[in-house]
Image 1 (cartoon, rainbow, N blue to C red):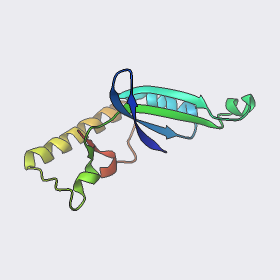
Image 2: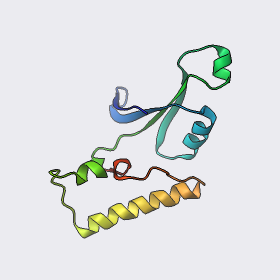
Image 3: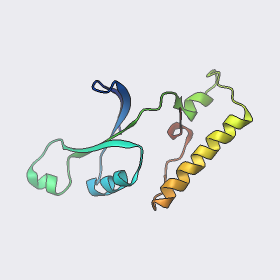
Image 4: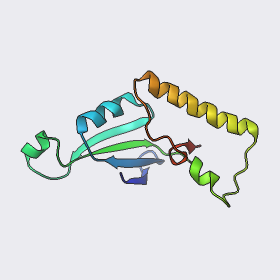
Length: 121
């Protein structure tokens, strides 16, 4: 889905918002299980009440803390100039494994683990 950076004027904090389409009940059950989620909203975008009841034309917005640095993928790009030592590499792997253990403890799996989805702060 689409992802964009936003700024909360009341708290002067930056966050990211991603929109997802699909079965609302399934998405909301996943959202409720995840931590680091600031807010989840369901918004009917168009259509009749009957269509809404059949879960059509519904968008789920997931608002999460915005990572101040970037993804692992962008840091690994040629010319990025990112050089890390062994301790930093081990710290990244340890954080990744802790995150996976946490979502597995919730009975979920990531299914899209890649450098673009590993955020470095």
